[in-house]
Length: 77
Image (cartoon, rainbow, N blue to C red; front, top):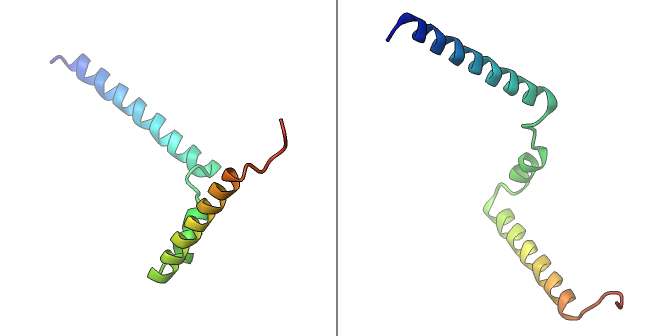
């Protein structure tokens, strides 16, 4: 390979690296990677009993929604 091609490859890869770094810094600055709800849920449901309770609550919620749909509650068309 000629030195011109190698220089061009280094220049393009450096440019793309800088673009990636700018994108990462922008994401950090604007809070793109902040997920407080996930963090708080992880702490709240840390133990085995809490996870079982969370699963049971989710099942109850799904069953209630299913019952609600089966009874056809809603405004008439």
